[in-house]
Length: 332
Image 1 (cartoon, rainbow, N blue to C red):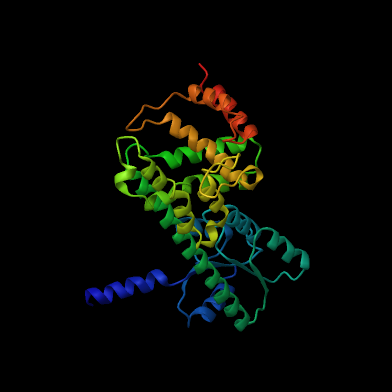
Image 2 (image 1 turned 135 degrees about the horizontal axis):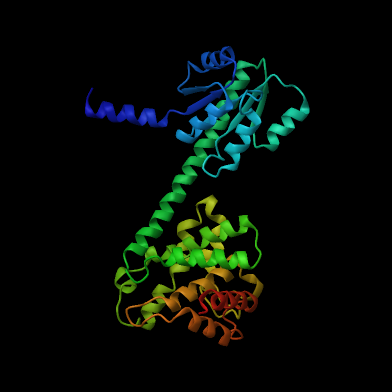
């Protein structure tokens, strides 16, 4: 086999969908495998829920065909554990069971099952649902890959400059702490965490000579730097999964009084995620060293926030919460 043949074979193996078939009845497992044999699927078998969970942990499949009534760990429990784990929640699960009651179907769906078939199932119906769910899983995987690429860009951006290294990660950490102190829900906190990580992604389009300049920036150079929110928005707007983060990326330099950039919006026009990030971004900028000045300590930054609470730059209520957090966290 030539090198090119090997490369093609490796690509085919990587692109072959893996299906986990779980049933305590060996005959049922073999029947499903027989139906799937003509197709380009890698089939993995499990004969109880405990074995299935171990296989899923070691090598997550692309789709699970799952019986409900099994010894040790039931199909309901497998479904619940798979769907409650962020690493496996997007794996489609098709329940294949002899249980016919509506309550059984409702319970399985409540645990996160994506589809439900009753034994004896129709072969064509099974294959159709498998193909549909695998196509959906592939779209999720592609979307996840696109997200990973953008987050890798953030890391590459910060690695270029020793003075801003870790900035986005710190802003994200501070934003999460602030969001929780404000009593926001965990889904809102998760959104803010990612949005803050991405807030400076537009700096990937800013000239290195300006990003790494030791002296203070000229007015022209500062104007160039200020294009980064709009640049970041343009980079991420085509990714549908990034839609919730766009307000943070585009508007984290807006001001409550409408004197910010790039759009000059103010007051309630600025989404909450951007109002939070504008404060934590400013805090990290104040407390980090720059080529032209040393960072101040957190208590000094809290004092500046309190002094400027009525200047119209930041949301007063959020700023007060954050300043109080700083003083409590860094008090001797």
